[in-house]
Length: 125
Image (cartoon, rainbow, N blue to C red; front, side, top):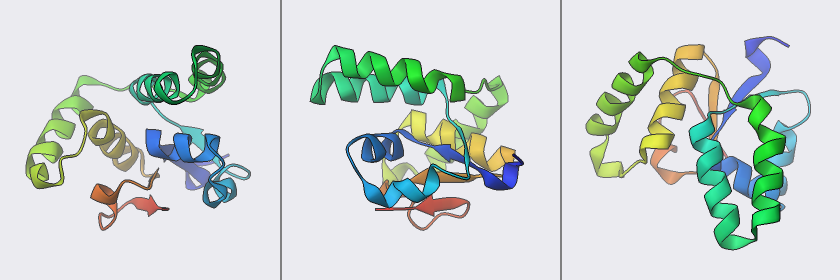
């Protein structure tokens, strides 16, 4: 499957899909998923907090095959992006994901309000 059918899933998107957010179902079939281990770290913590260790571990293991590596340059660009958008109070993890998606030429799938009006975003709330 080409990059045209690939989406970067941020933590918000995973949480919504896991908790039954039917608005995310249309992005599962027919799309390839990428994310980072940083997003999986956030997801694992969220599921530990809201559910339990078994569920958190299960989703981490199930989704880690979609995690891609990224270069140091992505971190530097992400910090510039975070600084430019400091009023939005975006997380470092989300900034990395957004910049990585943009660099890959794929959409950043999120429901995070801070990204609502940015380019290269598939915003679903």
